[in-house]
Amino acid sequence: MAKGERARTVGELRRSGYKVINVKEELRKNLVAKLQRGEQVFPGIIGFDDTVIPQVENAILAGHDLMLLGERGQAKSRLIRRLVDLLDDAIPVIAGCDINDDPYDPVCRR
Ligand SMILES: [Zn+2]
Figure 1 (cartoon, rainbow, N blue to C red):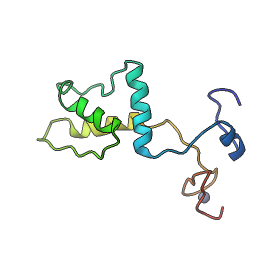
Figure 2 (cartoon, helix red, strand yellow; figure 1 turned 30 degrees about the vertical axis):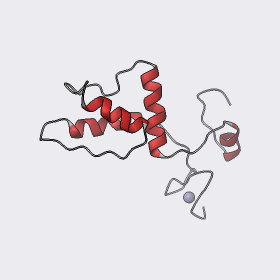
Figure 3 (tube, rainbow, N blue to C red; figure 1 turned 135 degrees about the vertical axis):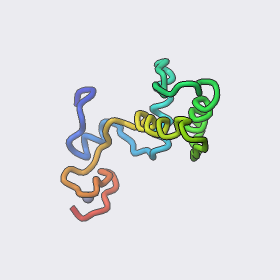
Figure 4 (cartoon, rainbow, N blue to C red; figure 1 turned 90 degrees about the vertical axis):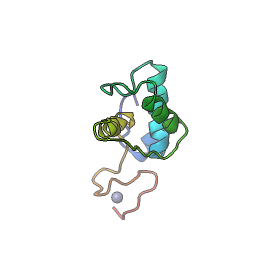
């Protein structure tokens, strides 16, 4: 299987070395990669570079649960929407499965 190509069978997926990780691990993995590439993690969030953003980054790196408290207009929603950028573009699922089963641990009969 060529790099960047997606596995079409569970066997191909296993051979690709893919491992299922939870959302916190996924956020952390992609945050680390972004930081290593020197990318801005939360583009469009202005004025929190020395306060909120490093704290959110540290919380993600540490695998903590997050809670954002603040006044109206303090970019809480904007920040939350940017967290999606730290998730993988796609994850493997069983084709045709209504609940997008984990290929390594399917729940439904299909
Ligand atoms: Zn299923």
